Length: 219
Image (cartoon, rainbow, N blue to C red; front, top):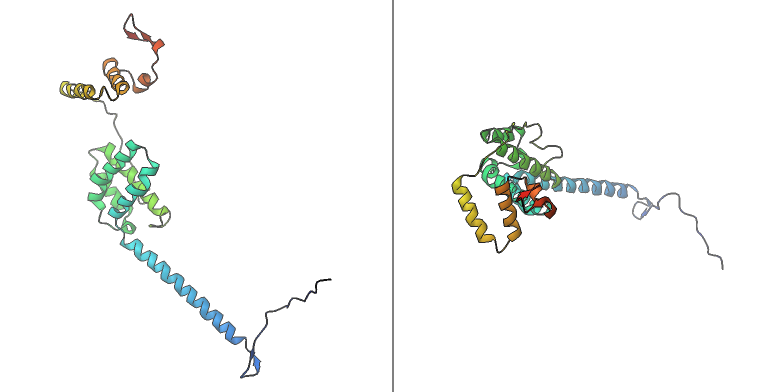
């Protein structure tokens, strides 16, 4: 049996106002306007609430979240340790109480300049700050493209070379003896570095066919 089809109305049906005896569309238009206005007000309140949260967060709070939620999952252990060191020693003491939305390039420049006598550390701290404020943008704690570290010029770094003193070598020898049973390969590697002066990569890639046992030489 064929299915009966009905024509689709060209416009939405209108309700009859029983009191006025006329079609009541004005009421629906008024309701729609009020509903739209209420939705707009609700969005504004939510935006103000988020903005209020932004305004209350300090750099210290950002640092703690950065160390807990970002660093362990995106950094190697050695990098994570250096990040935390920079945060605890240089960032929090300087600008920890400042609201993150209030931090501007001048604040970063002043902090960086105060570490000018240790340029390597100053530049590493600047790098940590840059990553941290980039993450703050990802967390919607700051406006996009507002990183205050952008444009801060790094200090020139001189190549550092330092040799261990006799006392330091003695303490290192004692430490190696204590760890020899637990990590013999690592201890041997360190001893080879000390006695040969080879680069770390050369010792790591060393093979037995590079060693002349008769001449007691590494080729």
